[in-house]
Image (cartoon, rainbow, N blue to C red; front, side, top):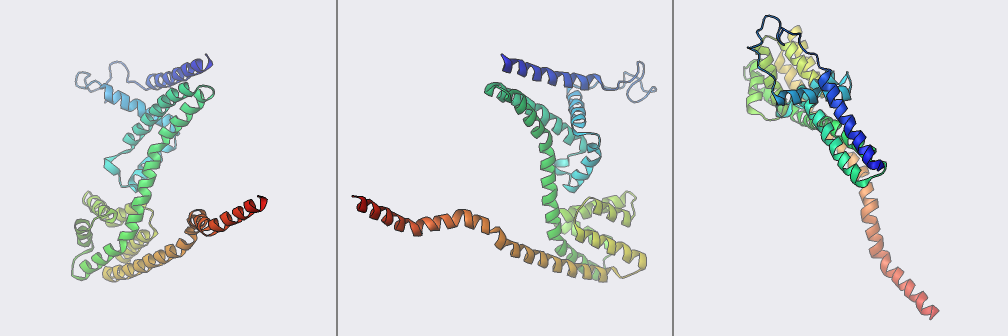
Length: 297
C-alpha cells in the first residue's frame, strides 16, 4: 500500500509542476494580441499543441536548471559548433523532455521494485534526463576544440602560402574555408559571414576566440589584430605563427608519449601480471599441492 501511495504522490507532484508551469505563463491582456495592441487578433495564428508543449518544456527546464543557466547555453552551443543547428530553445526543450521521460521511467521502475526506491529512482532518473543534453553538448565541444587545435598548423600553412602568393587576408580566409574541412574552416566561414553583415575584421576575429577555448588560436588572433594596427606584414606574422603552432603540436605529442608509460601501468598491473603469475607459478603451486597430498597419504 505504501509504494502505491508514494507512486501516486510522485505522479501528482509531476502533474502539479506541469500545471504550475502552464498557469504561471504571462498572457496578453484582453483585446491585445501577443504582438501588441495594434495587431488584430484575427491576424495572429493560434498556438498549436506542439508550440505549447515546446514552451512548457522550455519553462520546465529553465525552472529546474536555475536562472544563470540560460545565459551559458548559447556559449556552450557555439563551442560545440551548434550541432544539427541546435539553438538554446531547442536544448532547453530537450532538457525538459529528458526530465519528464526520466521521471516517468523512474516511476515505472520504482513501482516495480517497491520500497523507498519509489521516490529515489524517479528523482535520480529525472536528474539524469535533465543533465544528459548538457553532458552531450560538453563532450561535443571538447571533441571539436581538440580537432580545431590539431588542424591549426595546416590551416596556418595554407594561409601563409596564399598571402605570400599575393592574396589578401580575407581572401586567404575564404580559401581556407573552401578547401579545408574541420572546425577551423567552419570558423573562418563564419568570420567572413560576420564581416559581410557589417562587423569589422577585429570584431569578427575576437568573436571567434570567444567561441573557442584554444590558446593557440587566441594568440593568432591577437597577432593578426596587432599587425593590422601597427602596419606589420601579415605574411611574416602568419609564417611565424605557423612555425610556433607546429612546435606546440610536436611538444604536445611528446608530452602524450611521456604520459603513455604511466597510463599503461594500471592495465599492466591489473590484467597482464596476474595472468603471467598464473602461467608461471601455476605448475609450481600444483606440484607443491600434490607433494603435500602425497605426504599426508
